[in-house]
Length: 338
Image (tube, rainbow, N blue to C red):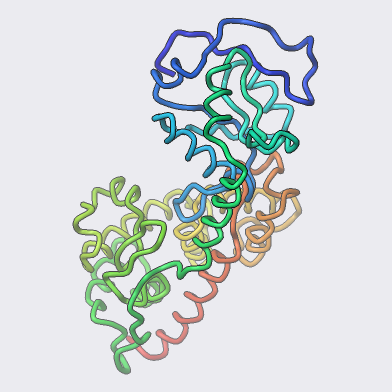
């Protein structure tokens, strides 16, 4: 925080020991607005906070983001391991509010625990909040997953025997830098956009290879070029090369390709979490078929709250299907295109 004000007074959470709480200087609404951010403490989970295809989601996160916008600041999330850490970090002044529905009896508040010495922040939340907001946010989140993930024109998976798409020459050229069969990259491209260079997802991914704006910035791909077929493919291969390097401990080329594809779709850190869980349970963490069950299990609290898991909750079904579909299409392309 861009301030020297102490941030350690808190309201006692329902589970806290009163003797553990100390009173110090307040860090109320005006100081939060001056600093420019509201710090929310929460746990990973579908109802609290998680990432999906580069998008920050979770009912409590979206609710907190609305309030932060209301008071003119950004929301910064600090993810805790459990309720004990939530209490400890709020007591230490590491956050302004616990973004979880802990107290459901007070319908004038969203159920959050707010730091002590913050009467103006408490009043602002009470004035802003109305019970209907929670239902609105839940409906908004549901609608994200009801509408098509990607808006695109669907093209045939092959133009003719021997010709997969209009972009085959780009696949051939840029696959040289990553050592992939160009038909595998073509299979991935079809899975991402069905060869529609104008495709765009609700999360903001664009172009043939559905590159997120933040990833485009990281790769040096101009946002004005995100729909350019060649530049999208070239940038995607550079991203794949990065992921390949991060996964260089997987020595088998076929297996590493699977893990790279999974990371491209679901995020490298989620994939690493699944690998650690698989290894703990005596599975081979370098074999995709032994790791993908754990990608699926990362939507269960028992797994995404495990101490081995760093990235938290994951919607893993899509990632597993993503790799499966690309591999199935690749086998067809190998028979039909040289």
